[in-house]
Image 1 (cartoon, rainbow, N blue to C red):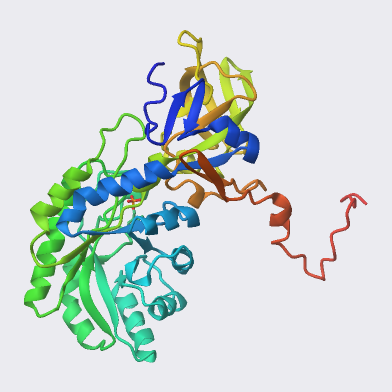
Image 2 (image 1 turned 60 degrees about the vertical axis):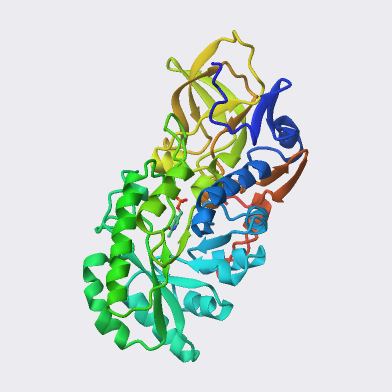
Length: 439
Ligand SMILES: *Cc1c(COP(=O)(O)O)cnc(C)c1O
């Protein structure tokens, strides 16, 4: 069990002095102060990832827009802005969050297959850098809204390069049977479409073929296709100056080999660099995933039917990835076990009334007891942003650690507050405390 902590980046989370720390802060101190479950992020690791990516692609002139659907906490966004990167948003809500965190509108790109008229209008009013348009229907809507404002909107067309990203079916987006983007073979229609639309200016192409892609091969193919398409459109007279290459760069959750930012830079160099385009990328997961953990406490160790269940106080509403994508997350004890500690094979589950509320099956860990803390690793991306209040559970808080300092960056949203979100109409009558159904 000596490589128990191998999935945790040492800059962010390291075992020492008897227990796992987030940078300079013992995790037990955070649990004692804030309670569990709680997301804990490492500012040093976030910065390290952003700087590594910028070191790799910066020399190629590639701008970075953080795909904030992976982690939209205001403190994380403010850190990203301070590191000099922008945001890729997929909703009006994300636009509001990005701008509130101090992102400059000219560093924000709006992606997404179903932008509403209100969202498009808000994007134009805010002066975002670019709208990535995903269909001819959307192109006409943007034209209409920009026209009503007496404006011309800069748009990039998201094309679907029909590349198999070889990732989980629920997160692949670049095959032609996906809902995303404009099928490259229908771009021939563009001439007729765009001539009739005076209030949009097609300034670039965009693409995004999926998430958690572990090898450069799908990117090489897709970037090559997009570059060829862009040059074809240029020959037809379109003033294309921008290529948005999307995100999707994978990270190891279990035994995968690391996807290196150097390989990404090589793929860009080999395909799209030096052809006169302003280049940008939209990474989410690769910047934040391993900079976060979900800290939870064991409620029970339940032995039943020859099985050992570790019942945690975290559940699928806090971190849905295992239930939704069959995702693997390493789970480690916060107290460092003795070298010869006995081990047990656990099913690690949450308290929610669904069998899918399972974080791991048959996971061998040092023996744990009720009350022990565990860290669910690699939970910084698509964790808190996908959390819900299912089973009337509080929304888990988020904590940011920076050296020996730490702060709660989202407080726990308690159930008392959630009850106030609902309203009982008059004709039902006010809920009477203590009244039982049988009365
Ligand atoms: C989700 C998404 C991304 C980010 O994907 P990651 O796998 O987190 O890097 C980038 N661009 C678009 C359009 C997306 O929908």
